[in-house]
Length: 330
Ligand code: COA
Image 1 (tube, protein in one colour):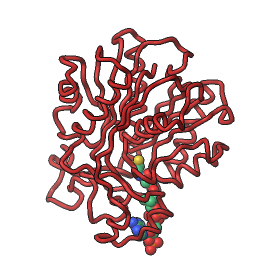
Image 2 (image 1 turned 30 degrees about the horizontal axis):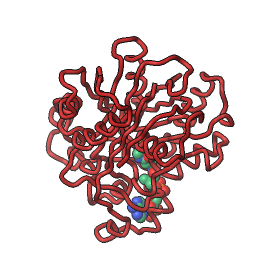
Image 3 (image 1 turned 30 degrees about the vertical axis):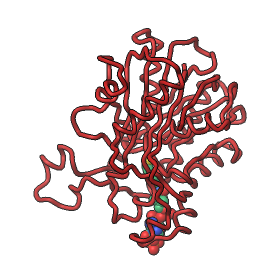
Image 4 (image 1 turned 120 degrees about the horizontal axis):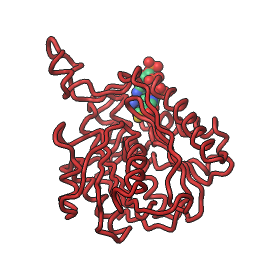
């Protein structure tokens, strides 16, 4: 069950107007087409650094140090090898605990919740620290106006502990899925073995920067997140009308609005922090969870759905009754 939340965003705020200085775009276009006014950009901090900060806060919120495993969900790893989780665990002073990364695009956190809660409910570990962290803007081509205006950096973390099915804070059921036939719709072509083993000559396609088909990703994000939420609600024997809040991947306000419309949700049920942080990839769901809990927007007893969609393609949803839980965001 959910026993503590933490989040960290780097201090540097980059407004739309600042991006307009170097890109052919406008504040009006970014706010109306995406819903972002500003984002946080990590300077001198990489994904593991952000993860350590969020992890410290989640451990403080849960008031626990007896962690059995650390899982890091990220699409912007510090290095291709090794995974970042072992370094996060040691920098948090957790010793030689189990530690590994999860790569499931922007769905990595909700995939990570499914893995972490299985590890706890199976009795393998008494508690798990799951962190989603992204210094994703390092992977965005600064000259690509389509992607450079969307993303931001940040990290969110949760501590999961053993509990009873059905009690507040217990996670599940889960709906997880993927569509590898659309792997090229949002991807980073360079930097991996494919670029090195198959490239005949260096091209812009081998650059380690995100490439995205915006309109197709938009459509598939709406379809797959909505379908995933419907499936998880059916498994949980409840309906959208029973929900107090949906925390969905913060990619584009128009995606959130379309998912809300399709599910028959009111605007108040679909939470959003997109305007101040942009799309923080896998970190977006736990960042919003932690901020909403800290601000009082999420309260004990509320029925909440978490939903995500990302590169892969991947999607994932789960449902929980919000517990009495601390959240540390500053
Ligand atoms: N500023 C101004 N104009 C821009 C622009 C920018 N930053 N980026 C694109 N445009 C222009 C395009 O060149 C195009 O111009 P044209 O009509 O003259 O050809 C026009 O805006 C529309 O482009 P399009 O790509 O159709 O825009 P869109 O309405 O689909 O919005 C996204 C683009 C990227 C915001 C939107 O497709 C989106 O959010 N997709 C999903 C992204 C996502 O979720 N990614 C993460 C996956 S986890």
